[in-house]
Image (cartoon, rainbow, N blue to C red; front, side):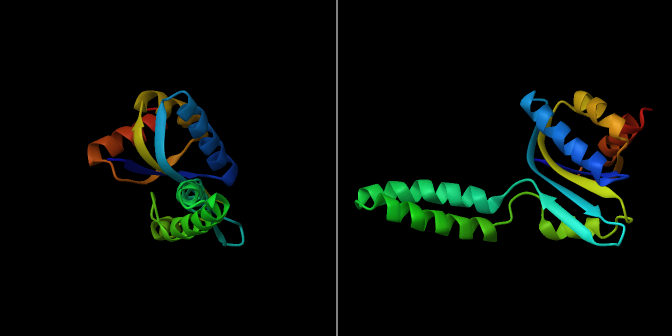
Length: 161
C-alpha cells in the first residue's frame, strides 16, 4: 500500500526542485512514486495544479496498442489503432488514478499566496536517503497517511533534529 505525503514549500521553485529531485531519486531506485502532483497559489490568490501522471496519454497509448492488435485480427490495423487510441484517451481522462484531484484542490486552497505543495504517493522508498536529499529544500509536512509516530519521525528528520 502506498503512503501519501504532502510537503509545503515557501515558493513554487523549491517545490519544482523537489519534483526534479524525486525523478533523480527514482532513477537511483531510492524512491518509487505511484503518483505526484504540484499545487501552488500565485500572489493574486489563484490556485494552480500540475499532475505528473497523465492518465489521458497513458490511456491513449494503451488503447492504440490494443486497437492495433484487434485491427490486425480483422485486417484493419490503422483503423483499429485510431479507434483504440481515442477510446483509451477517453477512458484515461475519466479515470482518476493515484492522488484524488479533489483532495489536491482542497489542500491547495489552504496555501498562502506565493506558497506551493508537493503531493507524493509513495510505493516504496529508502526513507533516510530520501529525507536527507529533501531536507535542503526546507519543507514543512502538511499532511500524510503515515501513522502518528512515523509522521513525527518524518517531521523531526526534515527539521534536522
